[in-house]
Every structure is written in C-alpha cells, then in structure tokens.
Amino acid sequence: MTTEPLDVTAIRKSRRKLPPTLVAGLVLVGIHVIIAVLTLFWTPYGPTEMAGGRLEAPSLAHWAGTDRIGRDLFTQIMIGSRIAIMVGAGAVAIGAAIGVTLGVLAAFATRTLDDALAATLDILIAFPTLLLAMLVVAASDGASLGAAILALGIAISAIVARLTRILVKRVLEMDYITAARTSGTSWPRIIIEHLLPNIWPTLLVNFALQFGLAVIAEASLSYLGLGAPPPNASWGRLLQEAQGTVYTAPFGAVAPGIALVILVIGMNLLADGLRDFGDPTRRRSR
Image (cartoon, rainbow, N blue to C red; front, side, top):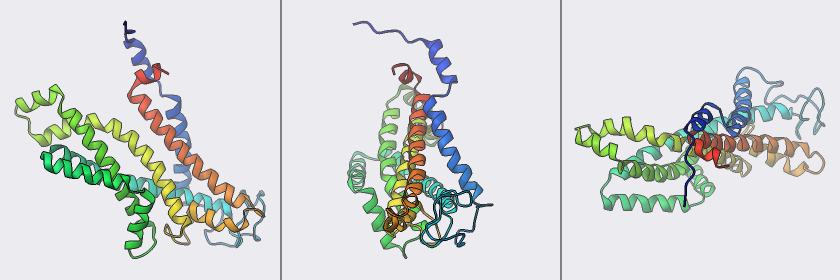
C-alpha cells in the first residue's frame, strides 16, 4: 500500500492562512466580547429601568421589545453577554489552573497514586456537570455569580486534569525528554520548556469547548434559580422569566436563546479552527 507524500509547501501555506472556522468563530465570539465590554460604559437603558410598557413588540425604541415589567430586553441581552463571557472565562481559568496542576502531578506520581487519581477523575467526569455545579452552589452561601463560576470551574478541572495527564504521559515518552534528562536538565525546567509548550495547543482546543459548555451550564443554573441573582440579567434567567409569556410575547424567549446559541456556536467553531490551525494536515484531508 502506497502513501501519498506530504506536500510541505502546501502545509506551510496552509499554516499562514487562517481556517474559515477559526475566522467565523473569532467573529461570533468577538461580537459578544465587544458587547460585554461596551456594557461596562453604556447600555441603551438602565438595567432596572422601566423603559416602556409591558411586553412591547420590537421597535426602533426597543430593538428586542420589553419584558413583562417593561424593561428593555435588548439591554438585558447585552448584560447577559457580559455575564456569559465572565462565567466562561472564569470557569475555564479555574478549571485550567486546577486541572493542569493535577494532571501534571498525576503524570509524575507513583503508579499507585496515579491510578487513584485517574479513578477519582473518572468518577468526577462521569458525574453530570450540571448536577455537580448545583451541589457546589447549594453548599455555598447561596446562589451567586461567583458561586456559579467556582462550581463550573471545579467541574471543568476534572476534564482538564484527565486530558493533561494523558498528554503529559505521551510527551514523557519522547526521545527529547530522555535526552534532556540525560543532559542533567531539571524536571521544573523540562516541564516549562518541553512539556507545557507541547500540550498547550491541544489544551486550548479543549478550553474553547469547555467555555461553551460552561455558558450553557450557567444558563441552566440561572434558569433553575441557582445562577446569577437579580439584577444580573443572565440569559437563563431571561428564558425563565419569558416562559410564562412565550405564546403572547415569544420574542422574549427567542432573543436570549439566539444570543446563547450564537456564542456557543462561535466557541465550537473557534475550537474547530484552533484544531485545524494546529494540524494543517487535517485540513488537507477534508
């Protein structure tokens, strides 16, 4: 069986060209980031301002209409973007800090300790993320944005730790690691100069995926009343408030749902684009 030789020139050109999925993901996510930053300085109306009548249809004055108490829905959705970005970034940061540390330690641990950590991580991963987050929020002082971020970060850390452990073990088997050890290079230096640079590309793809899952989980928590409390306009809480008027004023449920879907799709496209950018041969095989 013959194998088609790799076209090195084509690979180098493909590396310089950003994958379409990466560009699309950056655009969709970038829109939400810009809106999130904009809400720190300006919104069409105040977050709690009664800007119009109850359940008004979309108009020039209220682009997405008003909710059941007369607040501008577009303002609420903009603030929801800020909360979603904060939750996604915060949860991924916590999950990365805990998960990467545990994963590296597990890879260097003794066989017995490694097996115990691997079994613990498998149990945590098998546990539903939303249920684990609900338990952490319930164990805290009450529903809050900080508690939701911490809960989701802990849930993400198990997935990151398992992936990190697998990646580190794979890199430790490489010849250049053996050569570095033979030359007397210390383990901390090997971790910083060899291990982390080789596992970060794969971890970044996973972080993008976990970001989208964290946004969905926070919306679910807020829908159940365990997420960001009022006056924080989480998309999940907006969906819960619009549930009773979905037939008379459907846009109140459709608008935050569309915003949520756009951000999650953007993060998935971003993850797929990062994977393609890191492995140009994968793009050529499509």
